[in-house]
Length: 277
Image (spheres, rainbow, N blue to C red):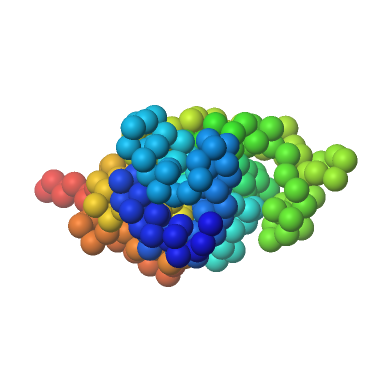
């Protein structure tokens, strides 16, 4: 399959899946390889034949959509995010959450769980001692059942831990037969199969991490709708974390950049009621 042929196919197909071609330019070869394997399994000669197949079998669009998932994930991705969470964001959220005794967090598009487990490790090792009366509840969602099965298993190749600081690796993992297993103490994460375009957890949440999913791979026409739903699940004063090259749509007026951070936005707090005389 020629790159030009697959590019033309993706430019035709992705908008029909409510996905954005722009986000796929750098990863198109991975998707094209999957599509080539799909054509082989179906016994189809080329992409023209696949288009005809899609035209007569609506269920094949769901198969194609699954082929377009990009599960790029690793522990401690974007160190600056976690530095900002530790120094500014999580302490503020912990103070606000003290009456409830827990911070509620959501990892949206969690892939195989690295982000959710990083957050669990990071909180337990670095921050829990500073806030002993506050816990952390984590929900993690993804539309891919196979990725979620890996997340629940909690076993990872050494390469996925290469950016994780040594104190977190030592505290959080057990090495077994060439893989690293998340320790039982850090596995209290609720993994749910949900496609963000169809369903989301209700919340409310103090912290939402939605990185390199909606604002990278989904079509602009639905980005604002989905991000508005996500922002609406934040408590006032809650934090939204996006990817390194992502910016929430300008229509989300309830969000503002968290001062002193990159990639982190805050839902406007509820104004304090005026004091009576």
